[in-house]
Image (cartoon, rainbow over all chains, first blue to last red; front, side, top):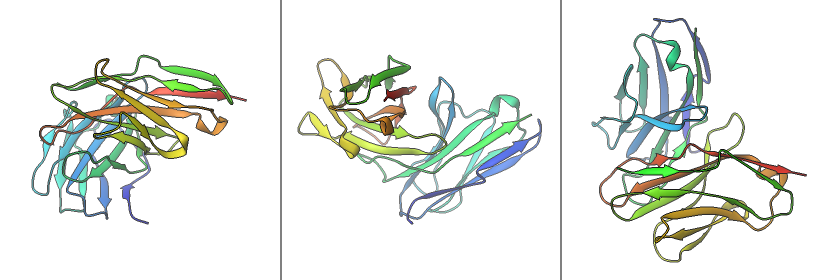
Length: 113
Length: 114
């Protein structure tokens, strides 16, 4: 089925460990996004890529890096995980601009201990 | 800067009654407006959007929303609630000018009681 695929679905890290969250879409969308969801905070944008070859910071980029590997894939890296990064992470994709909504992945639940 | 407010953390409604989930927004120009729904342990699913034209927008699962420019609101409504509508609802906005990402509200948890 067409959509956005995120891996892994669950992950437990120790403080200071690193990991990469993977995201791939097969809808030929130009733009891709990483959000984190925390109780009472809604969705907050971490980084986004408006088109292949570009990335920009969102509202909460500190502690994260991203790579737009190609048009399909957009990865999120935590270089040195902290307990404050315990969250549910969602990747999304969309057409480039205008009145197009997002298609979301099913999320990665990350716990940092 | 763009922003969205969902003033209610929780909305409770009896099955069969009408429901309203409130959303107000702030953008510098004209908005694109969206509603998404999230069921437990799932990603967000698109419900409906306002782009242009008729202020009353109809979407999935019998939901509708009314765009009110003077009140900068985009409230989600349904004439008759179902228990299966119980979920977390997010309003989102983006400015028409430029390619800015969607800004989401904090979400409203809807509980429909049988």
